Image 1 (cartoon, rainbow, N blue to C red):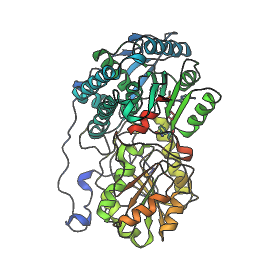
Image 2: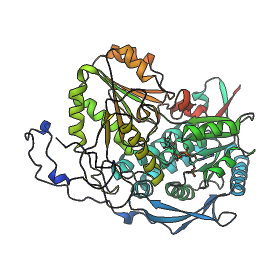
Image 3: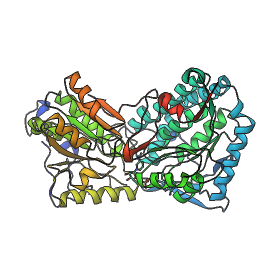
Length: 516
Ligand code: NDP
């Protein structure tokens, strides 16, 4: 068993960890308690050479690379090393206006009236180029965001391409998607995306918008602009007409200037609930369509008849995937009281095998937290969890000397009133609560202002159906977690937002339906 972290070890601190070679083995490996693992993983770094990062990036407006109107730039850094990666033009409100005009011109002159089968060709081309350049995108995404290369390589980039493939298929079939109605594009879509899945969130938003005939102005998050700017290069390579896609990195206030720009017809936002509410106010009283994909505090419910080893994998995937920086993360584990002890034993054994470190190492499971600010937020909430009396556990592991890293963390004996049970931590921190009956599980799972996702682990199909009907969550996974597919709608209830992305529902969010 890995040892308990002591009080002298600050969560996320670099002291007190032991090297993997010294960690004693979990009993479940059959080596016997206390037997040392006699080997260490060799480093398996992905090469940085597959991507050329420019020193400076401009805004991508009207198909051109342009400087900000006031010439200002900002620096994006690698959160795993704290080294600067590039200087990026910092858009102003005037630049947002310029981008909206470029998008409007492209909508009027070409894209809005182009036959669906022609639009489809561009989307297919973009999908193919994303696949051809997938290693380049994966390495860049891991460097700019801190996520492990095995996730950017196997999840983010392939899923981004899959969204373009999927929506390319709909571009010439809108009359089948909405039978008996005529689907018209809305016009110019303003899209604001977060830093946890930069390329994937771009694809979730850009692909359905373009398939339906809209043009786009997209603002990436300030800590992760680079994959969106590389996507600008893909648009050029695909010969997309200028102005159909515009990429304008800039600070939050400038994002609000985009939202309130009168030339915008549709706003799509993914990010925090606080900013989502501001955006809702910003579009109130206008005719703009709005979709909001906001935070979450998902319950992952494990019943006593669940296959525990599988459930442990699902729990780990649910909360430690992408450092827990996932809106639908299974951050509250609800374990049936009769199995909580063996479940936590198995979970602690599994945590001892999680590798935290260099995002570009192919063996890394948990990479760097996206920013210092986010690391501070996680640390603050973990301290609150300890102060409120929950039992704190971290596996022993070394952290790199530089960069924003945080050990996988587990809190047991958590009460519903604790901040770590209520607030979105957006980090690798799991809070464990217990329940006795299905009704109690439902009540506790729904006891949150959020309603984005949930998970259920049980052997009984009837129990899955019973639970799913009662859960106030947009997505409920059964005996799995964090599964995404472009054909499947995703979105929330309550403070997790409204509207759906993915599938035909995601297409619906970008069209106006008229009678024939
Ligand atoms: P934000 O909601 O601030 O950021 C998301 C996007 O919104 C970014 O592009 C950001 O730009 C932009 N933005 C910020 N302020 C405004 C504004 N006033 N008007 C328009 N756009 C704006 O999230 P944070 O990065 O601050 O993260 C804070 C917390 O939010 C996290 O700890 C997490 O709990 C939650 N979160 C949830 C996400 C989700 O997927 N549901 C994703 C990200 C965060 P910029 O980057 O320039 O600030």
